[in-house]
Structures are given as structure tokens and as C-alpha cells.
Image (cartoon, rainbow, N blue to C red; front, side, top):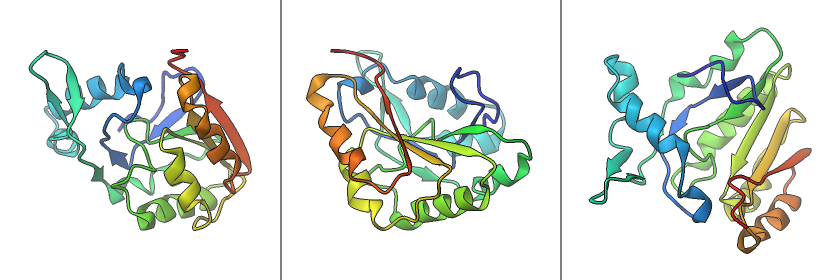
Amino acid sequence: MKEFSKIEWTDATWNFILGCDKCSPGCAGCYALKDVARMAGNPNPNVSAANEGLVYRQENGLLNWTGGINFMPQRLAKPFEWPDRMKVFVNSLSDAFHDSVPLEVIRRAFAVMRATPWHNYQVLTKRADNLEKLSGELDWPANVWQGVSVENQANAYRIDHLRRTGAKVKFLSVEPLLG
């Protein structure tokens, strides 16, 4: 698991879920596909097993998601090992609000985030409808920054879903900015 990130707007990534599927035009150039495909071939059997079966190469040579999701409960405790305050990008290789992620898994992650208030957690989703639907079932700690991706005007409706959540801090990601 990549702990300390080269992503300029965060300090670390916390990937206790891997896998996804494309849900909008913003997914066309998904960087996570390449990362998961690369890690599926890692010589470390723990790394390769976690990423195996999540990505495939289409006939046109492009990578795509299989739609499978791998939950790794052993990674949930990782933030307790980071004593210094960090901004943590949650599930940079998946979407916590994917249809296949059970509410109980999301609740367990939120419990860890609540128990580690020295970190700020950046949770980003394109599945804003699921986010809003589940929002009332979650105990929103102040250190959870909830965002939605809005890559074009057709997906601006995600902002309204985000507004109606219980998140204390809300943000938008407008990349890739397609329109």
C-alpha cells in the first residue's frame, strides 16, 4: 500500500478498498487502472493478490475495470500507525461509495477516521447519489472532508447531492475538467 503520496494535495493514501468500474466521462483516463494493473504483477504475493482480477486489457489495448471490489480489512488500522497529522486521500484506487461496497465497510472506515482526529481524510466520489443516500447512516466526524468529482456540466448535479450530506467539510474535484 502506498502510504506517503506524491499527489500534491495530500500527504498519504489509505487504500482499504481496491477496484471500481467506469461511471462517467471523467473515468476515461483513470490513473488508478494503471496503478492496479501494475500492482497485480508485483512479485510480492500480498500486493499482487490484493490487486489481481480487478483490471483487464480490452481488445483495443486499453485497460478497464472488471467491476470487482476487494476489501482489505487488515488495512483499516493503518492510520493509527501515522503519529503525525496528515491529509489522507481515502481509497485513491477505488470509490468508497461504489454500489458493491457494503454500508458496514464504510461505517468501519468512518469509525477509524473518528478515532484518529489528528488526520484529515479526503474522501472523493463520483457516486454522489449513493453518497447522499447513505449520508444519514454515517456518523460524520469533523476531520472527514467529503468531495465529489464534477468533470463537466452534465455531472454538476453531484454538487446538490453533496450539499445534502452530513459532511462538515465539503469540496469539489473538477478534474479532469472536460467541459
